[in-house]
Image 1 (cartoon, helix red, strand yellow):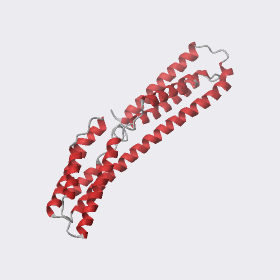
Image 2 (cartoon, one colour):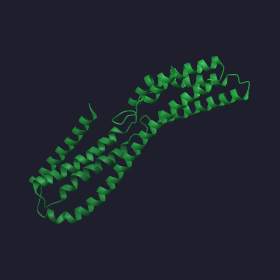
Image 3 (cartoon, rainbow, N blue to C red):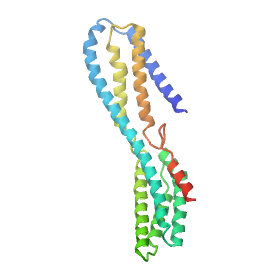
Length: 254
């Protein structure tokens, strides 16, 4: 389902439910003396709403940072892969061809095999790790008769190490930065209290205005929860990181 349609359904559904509850509370609930609760309810609402806003903001910022970091790590991994092949160009032809072949195969593996597993949280095949290790072995076994070749060999090894580090960080982002059950419990319960329970303690407004206020508040908070839900895994959802860095790298390697 399109993310805009799904988000609209989330917001509309929450607004309707909150509006119906607000109507039922005003229509059939105890209304005598409700306006007298406004001062006390307002103070509680300020504290609870503020704490909930801080929690939502903290979670959203953390998830946005995780998506940005995942994108940057993927770009670093692809760039280091290209840099390793450039450094290997100075090595003997057999090593050069072997590194180029394995680098292209690694980029295809990441794009075609690993990325779908990162999106659905499934186990990542060991093919990419094996190809990276084969590149490391090919560079390590390459003869270096002078300082220039030794420098190029060292540079290729360092770039492969950067590929390995970025790869491990990329794999660790797959589902690991999602929101845990405890945080989801706090988010959902806090949203119910902030958007439905406390607003229905206020009195003095007309019924239509009260329904609009409660529905708007519930819809807004649900919109933020929907954003959190979409950002849980950097490789899926509305802000997913695409394997464009490896697509571009593969074009340079073949």
